[in-house]
Length: 98
Image 1 (spheres, one colour):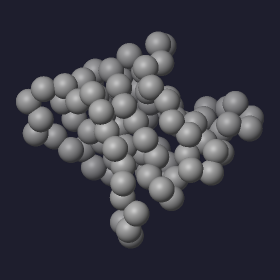
Image 2: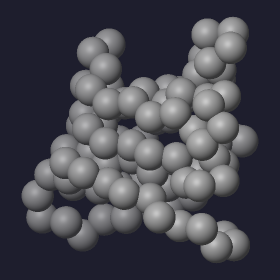
Image 3: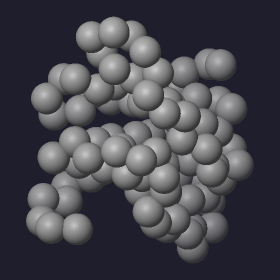
Image 4: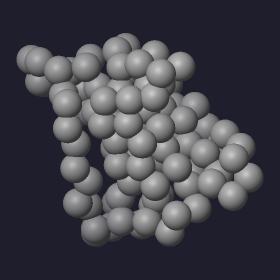
């Protein structure tokens, strides 16, 4: 697994990593234990970020999609598709109720 990107949650308790195999992982920083493997992209994940509450992760992939994940369940909430080329950057500025 080659890690391409990483991000800490706003509180510094969790770390998310994106890799060349199309998965992201959420880790407990204190213990170093993996909490979830986020599976659903079909190409490498090159960008990811937690929202300001730390309960969602946004991933961007070379499969031309972005996905929003629930950190508490490890499930994908939305797949954002429609791009005709690879995504190389994401930004999560969502601060309202979901």
